[in-house]
Length: 232
Image (tube, rainbow, N blue to C red; front, top):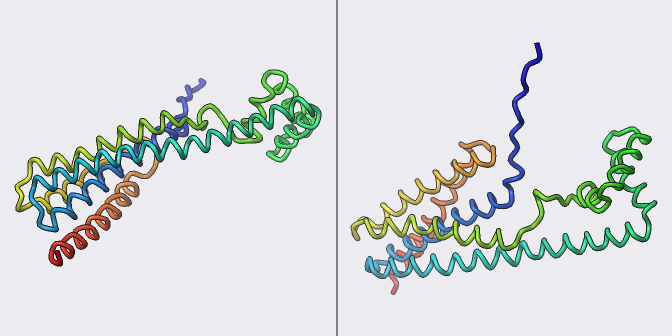
């Protein structure tokens, strides 16, 4: 009796949007919560804290979008330049490129004769695609997408930043710092678990990592805010 093999699950196809989404939401929660805690620790009014938090959310979302777009655009430019160079080399020296591709497969353990046959068949179908994938490491899954990364980062940052801002609205002014801190750490833990789950990583490790850095950031900003509030 032949057993049915379940389809394998891989997570590399999520790497582009997952990285931008997790980074954006994590930064949104952490930077906004830290800003709120720092301003609140300086004995500011609740309205001032809320205004500072909203300003931080807008500025952060725009900064994330711009940063991701510029960064991923640079990667995309490099990929396009490599592909253009490879296209030229295929046009000028197809024999050398065939040998180069076959040699890649030989180094991976394929028999030389079979490696050459594979290289010939792949190049006959899509020479540039074969070299892009196996020589340059560029594929449809990992290709840079600047607009997608920018929009994902801005949206996820805004969603993350909205969480500590909501705590400012519903919390009493006297307990603003502990409530925002505790709730934000809870949000970060939840986000870390979701990110680890979506990426197929260890959930406990991902959760602990974001809690540690989140707590450290808020402790520092609260201390600075209290120090400046006392001095000023």
